[in-house]
Length: 323
Image (cartoon, rainbow, N blue to C red; front, side, top):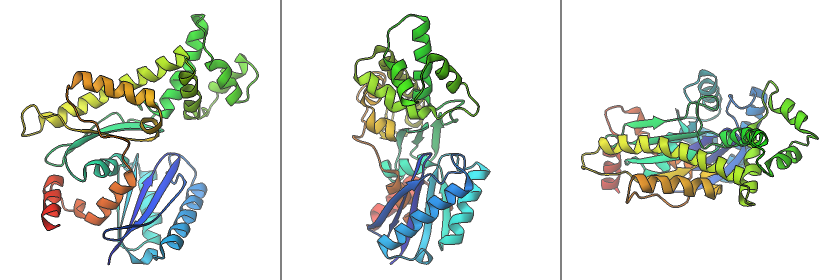
């Protein structure tokens, strides 16, 4: 019996799981261990807490792990990659695979087969896998340069929309809601707070904007629709690339979703799906959202990614034949 450690290192939380060859044995969640999002002391504390809970719940020693797979946005950034590699190599036996969070989400949805994954949580990204196992992406350039449809961008755009509404003398309940949330007493205090360096965490405002949209606020609703449309434009780019790489003429890949925004913000998801269905009639969208930790487990079990001469599709076909 072999054991595998799977990790989905997000910007605000981290999921961990231990599995054997067929069963998920234990799963826990702590705060982020991603060094772009927190300091080393906090990351280490979160990591130690999670691994202690995981081994206690599963009864499996980390020295029995055959392979660890970690999915993390910014996985190629030295500060992120080096921290994860060093800390997990010191605590768990076996190989450590560090891949992008979109890779494990793709695997959770399609298990090595072609398809497109749209991810929107704290950040956002769109990725597609072709029949040959090649991955193509759009977006994912971080909060300053991209992150369409993400919690960060919804928060920032929502805040900007408040001031655009003030200039246009357009009514909105967003202003009072944001002032209450940040415990600020005036418009001037909000201006100072929003422009401070370092900047506040704009993604915290996402819940406020969604609540105002649900209450009928037109400004908030327009923010969500525009972010959905921006994310749909990225998805369309990737859908076309994956389809063009197919041996099936006119084939359109299925689309899966991941991330808290696409799980919990119905207006963003429905507007995104509506735009894709209009542009690609008959396109299939998977229900719900994928669980990236399942993709990390699949990838840890497979271990084939270290072999450059085996494509994702070939490996999947081999596995199905073996089973």
